[in-house]
Amino acid sequence: MSEPSHARLSPSGADRWSVCFGSVVLEASQPDNSNEHSDWGTACHAVSAMCLTEKTDALAYLGRRIDVAPHRTVECDREMCETAQTYVDYIREASTGAQLLVEQRLDISHVVPECFGTSDAVIIRDDELHIADLKGGRGVQVFASYAVDPSDPNSPRKPNKQMALYALGALRAFEILGDFKRVRMTISQPRLNHLDEWDCSVEDLLATGEELRQAAERAYAYVDSTTTLVESDLVPGDKQCKFCKAKATCPGLARRVQDEVGSDFDNIATFAQSDEQKAMSLKAYTPKTAEALSKAMKAIDLIESWCKSVRGAVEIELLAGREVPGYKLVQGRKGARSWNSEHEAETVLKAMRLKVEEMYQFKLITPPAAEKLKKAGRLGDRQWAKLQPMIGQSEGGKSVAPASDPRDAIVISPPADDFSDETNAAATAPTGEEFA
Ligand code: SF4
Image 1 (tube, rainbow, N blue to C red):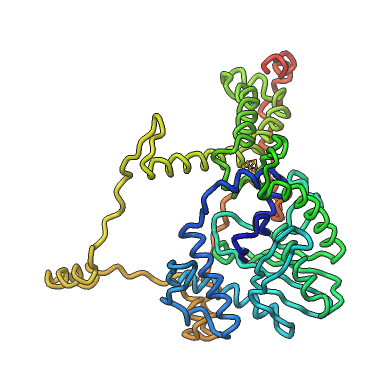
Image 2: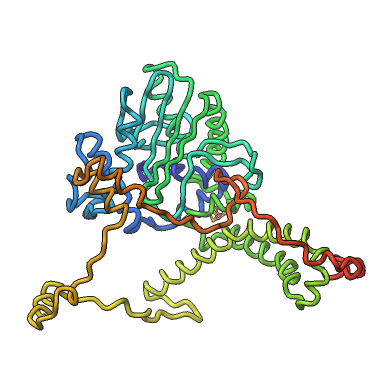
């Protein structure tokens, strides 16, 4: 989805401005941060839209240069074809027998002043309105809904704010086409092999719309205005700061990082004890340490994101030839060696009479490559069925996620209690408060 540049309170920025009203002021002075990644995403959206409107497959655009901005084009590469095709296949299946509208420009100004946007796909089926959004990135996984309290596995969920705004625009635009009862929202993020759906009643969507309308009213007070920025209107947090262009220079975020790091030094002190002290007090500390870890963990994303943005801002200054006291630009490590011209190197190596197996590295194709041959019709259904039992897949590594993450928790039994024979030692060990 994309929005016209003049949408000051844009749907894609709703996670930010609906919580941090003051970000409107700080972001307004920041330069446009489109880069090769966002250009690639824009081109991928264009290829997907052409596939759906011209009833073609993405490979038809391989190698074509796609306009992404005046005087800026991006070549449609193989990965773009695969990304677009995965999304297109989903949309074709989801819209079978329904009405499909591609790249629909939507007026959302009845919720957010001046707000417009373009929905990747709107699917109308009986009393259901379905909005789908292609995400071309592979950095941050995007979900169609979010947990109101991320630390609570049973937390109620609400629709993704960007998707909710598009759904509200579509509801208004197409209300004459049906008596809609439910709204479905889908995020397709093929480069992360991720597809997420969420559906809710029209009443729930309208309730979210009312919350967004009230937030927009407060944020809009700062648009093109001389209103003095109220400090409490800078509200740092993981979601709102993640893509904020003002992150590196925002005083509100800097203050929050300072507060978090400062308060956590107390907790870090707990880990700085001798092994003996730790062993003696492990039992007494466990609950307190877990809470401290939880609190520190909650602050990590925000602090990391701030560090990254400050690092980026320093790099921009130095690359622009401006001084940042105490820092300089240096040349990084050299990249891997490669032939300047593979063709020339191949000719010379052949003249050296090397054997074929010495000159070339042959590798068996991978299961995903075999699947592509199946999709391209080079392998039939029966041949593919014969290959499938031969495909293995290692389990993903374990990673930490918030309690509200939709994946099942891995249950691990704690190790046997090493201190069961040390009741007396534990009883006489100093209490947690003494070490704190
Ligand atoms: S960095 Fe965070 S706190 Fe600062 S303006 Fe942006 S969203 Fe608000």
